Length: 356
Image (cartoon, rainbow, N blue to C red):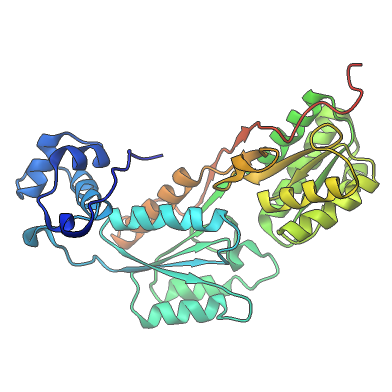
C-alpha cells in the first residue's frame, strides 16, 4: 500500500537540506537515486523522479529551486460526499497518484442542497481542467441520463468513471467485482452453517447494488438451492447509510435471517445496531458482513468482517487510464474489473446451536 512514512520536519527543518536516507525510505529507492534526482542528473526514470519529488513534498521539505515544477494541469475529482469513509480513502489515493504524475487535483464534493454533479463539472471546465475523475457519480445511476458524459467527451474533456458502468458511455470504467463480492460473503456465511441469509443493499437503480443482488441470488441458488424468486424476498433495498442498514436488517431479522450481507460498511454498522436493539448478539445470534473495508472499520465492536474494495489498485488504474487519455495514448475504453477480498474478523460466526 506504499512506503513507510517518515515524520515530517518541523519548523525551520523544512528549509534544511533533505536527508537522503529519509527520502530514499519514503520513495522506496536508493540514496544514490535520490542524490541523482536532487542534483538534476540524467538517467532517472520519470516515474522514479516523481516518487522522489513526492517524497520531498510528503516529508515537508521545500523543493530546491531548480526542481520546483509547474503543474502539468488541474484534474477534477468529483465524489458524492465525505461522510462515508470509503470516499475519502479513494480521494486520498487518487490525489497522491495524480500528484505523482505532476497534476494538481481539485476535489469537488456533492453536499445535500449543494452543487449538482453537472454544476461541478461546469465549474471545473471553467477552470480549464485537463481531465476529470468521477467516483460513484451519476454514471452509477441507471435512471440518470448518460448523455451528459457523451457531451463531455464531445467537448474534448478526458474523464474516467469509478464504481458504476453504463454501456452507452464510451469511456474508461473502473469497478470492483460486485457480484463476486456478494458471492464470497454468502459462501463465508454458508460455510459457517448459516442457511437463512439476507442482503441489505441500495436501490436497484444503482449498478453496484444491482450487481451485488445478482451475485447474492446466484450464490443462494448454487450453495443452498434457494430458487431465484425466493431469494428475492431475502433482499432489502434501502439507503447506503447506518440508518438504512438498520431498517433493512430489522426486516431481515423479521424474515428469520441469521446472517446479513450488507452493501457497505456503514450499512453493516446499522445492521449491528438493529441486532443489538433486539437484545441479540453479534456474532453469537446474527452474523454481519460489510463491504468496502473502510479505514478504521477493523476497530469497530466487534471488528467487522467485510469484503475489501481494492482501493489502491482501482484508484491507480483509474488515474493511469486518464493520464494515457490526456497524453493522447488512450488504452481500450472498457470496464476494468478488480477482484475484492474477504476479510474475516469478529462479526461473523456459526449460528446459535449449529453443530451442537
